[in-house]
Image (cartoon, rainbow, N blue to C red; front, side):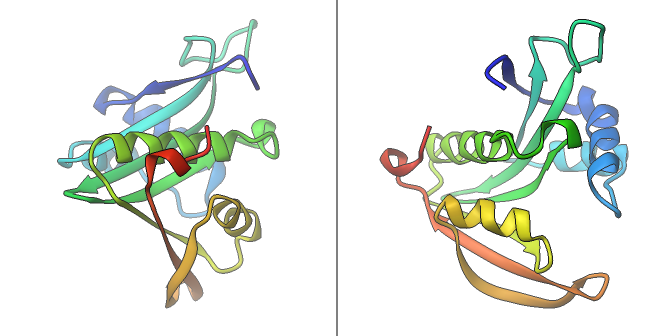
Length: 161
């Protein structure tokens, strides 16, 4: 995983991000949804790629994961985070999460929020390892499955690299 680079994404990457999202989620975001999110004030994103290529090649698998977040004043929220199956359980989710937290903190955010499906054990464990605490629950939010809402303070010195 050390060969993966985290690169900023923009509107031009909406189709690629939507394709990656479709691999990772039962109800994926469309390219139009990705573009709308990326067009919002304060929205940012990163994509993890093998080297500097955003397209798969013989030399490497290309894209491996993504994270999108938004910031309004001193609050930020992870909007989505996804790691493609070949890259799971190798620390990439944590790396993407940490990079998003660091970028949000550098831009002035003091708090990060996110939510995950209550049955997404891997995501909840990841967020717990990164000091997110449950602050609420949205009943039936994900097609009958509750959403767990979480938050953590963003003190730059406490964000693990």
